[in-house]
Image (cartoon, rainbow, N blue to C red; front, side, top):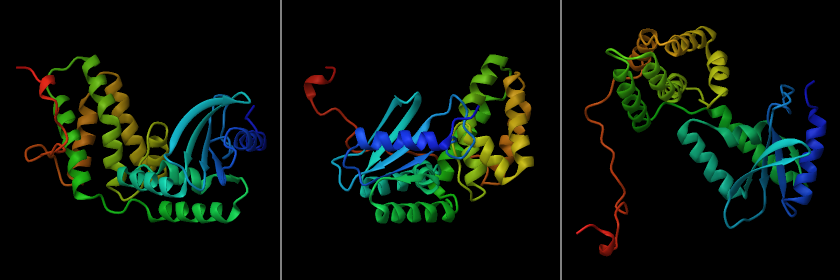
Amino acid sequence: MQPAAEGVLEIAREIVRQRYSGAACAFVAGSIMRGQGTTSSDVDLVVVFDRLDAAWREPFVQGGFPVEAFVHDPSTLAWFMDEDARNGHPVLAHMVAEGQQVGDDEGLAQALKQDAAERMLRGPGSLADARSKELRYIITDLMEDLRGDRTAAEIRAISASLYQPLADLTLLGRGVWSGKGKWVPRLLHKQDSELAVQFDEAFRAAANGQGSILRAFTESELSRNGGAFFAGDRRQAPVSARRTKESDLPT
């Protein structure tokens, strides 16, 4: 039996009253609210105060439901949504855009929902050159590891590392949002059901110790996004990346 959205909504109202007293508004999201929940589904809760010293995230259990709370004010929420967008995974924007509003400040809630919905609608845009090179370098390096005489266990380990960056390149390279975990097959299927099958079959074969199909799929995705990229990659460390106490250094 699926958990009821209305029951979760009431639990969320109680959480906001008791745990986040003084919050301006909150948004309840997740599979239960979409009518797709199971007995193991958690509740996503974005809580917004007028002003905070710093945002935070915390998991807890209430009413028998695991809850992931993301606590912000409008400026920290905007910053994290900007970061999500740069990474191609609009997690917070999706929660706010689809979430059910609770709390008193309806004006702020509607403004935040409109901003989040517009972000989602705009999409990630064209894959930026720096992000494209980063993904292509990671993928090229892992793809080369699939060549040669590899054990089945090694192929599975390589494919596990390859899954997320290849999903990002496949989706972002087509100008649509990417995601993580269970969202990858969902988003691939939404974009192109045939592509989703090809992606899944490539990793299914790799899980059985056969890397050739995954290597061929990877080469195809690299080709449509500028090709393999290895030589020429350079990543500058920040100036602050050094120990400053001489007494801490070996002599």
